[in-house]
Image (tube, rainbow, N blue to C red; front, side, top):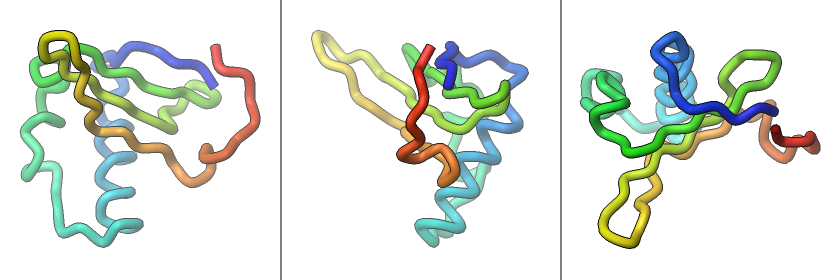
Length: 89
């Protein structure tokens, strides 16, 4: 698994990953349109990282820095990547 800063070319896969987990696993009636932070990730997050497996996004985590603290948001990992024993790069 490789961890990379968010890039615009990940956008479609990241949105699909997050909304699929929200809707299908958690049963939340939430859409992309309900989440303005997903429309402009660089604007809403001070740091947003994407976990890649074979160059495909399998996880996300966003940080909002407030003073000396970081608030974690949009932390999602696909089922196939959870608990995976792999060297993180």
